[in-house]
Length: 168
Image (tube, rainbow, N blue to C red; front, side, top):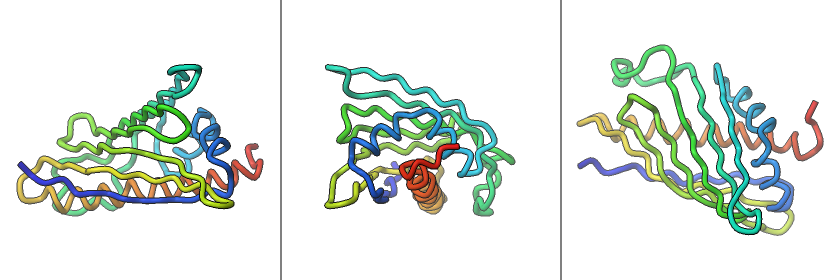
């Protein structure tokens, strides 16, 4: 069994955790973030739920171009790749995240959290990236972890504008 590659990435927002959580629970924001990340299509579904109205389920099913894929991975992917991101937030503090690439031996599983730190909110993802391909799994997992981190960085830029009221 191959050992997963650990991903630890953090972004910050100049807002309260409640404001960031409300933004992350907004389908329009999630679509705008996906467009900024260069996806070709994004089907976003957000379902509030949980006890006392807390928590939510986020599902983002997207089709992305496979730019920058290492040469060793080209035989596993075509010009595009489907990525399904599932988030289960128990409340505004955080929850779980799973990213799957249907048809490919890749899974990202972990936790997402929002923590107040003075004037900012820190959004942190701690996840394991597993690529079940002998010999190449570690290199490919590192590449995929880098893509997840880059996607978070892009979402942070979109989020800062959103939180400033730039939503038009």
